[in-house]
Length: 307
Image (cartoon, rainbow, N blue to C red; front, side):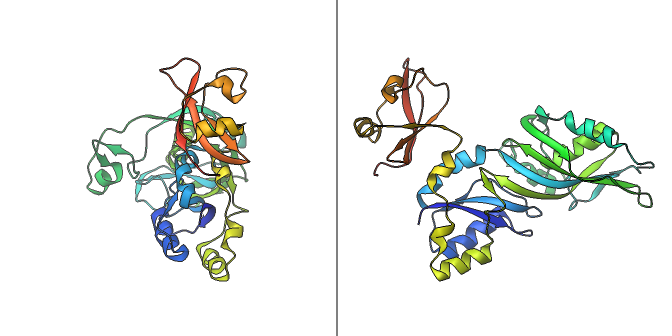
């Protein structure tokens, strides 16, 4: 069995839990996921099965879309609703919509983030959440993130009694973005401690929530012998690359991993990024510029050597 499965991960499970269960349901060990989701977050989790595990890194690097909620009034250890309260400050008066929208708009583009202590980022060979669980502090690396869109999608809800203010949002972002941190930083911009009070991933690596199926559905389709109809082809995993169709002659060279000049692929100029080579409508290899040889490309990943 080979292909990509848009899985709908339910809350309360880790991404690894999903892979573990799928190995039992699908009777195969060759399964991986393309982008971790926290246990408290539900949504689209791209799953790679069989030969499709070769494109996991491309899925992880792709953009994602989330819907969620930001709450001002207190921050937490985990930057979401599951953590312990750290800092509180009552929101005594409701903020203006324009003020909130302007704060969110200021994060669109390339930004820098400091990863949450409760995250899997490694520092000195140890994950940050391990330091956090031992009540240890460590200097965290500053990372760059790309925010393509960050918008409020609901009215503003002010709870005068509790001194809290919240609203729903949608964000499109690049790889490595911590949406929890984005929520916290938005609060700081507005002058209040904040946390991410809800989050759902609605799209990842070109897979949308409308396509996603649950573990229970996967088990049903597997039992009924129709699971193949719900798998996406390997080609979906390389959709972000420029597609180049190759001839029979070039295929003989590509399948042997030869380094080739760019004009062999009928390209007008030397590409600056990786390209996806297709033969008979199937992706066979990813080629990239070879820094050691002028005007030549080399294989960065062989996906198929038989078509």
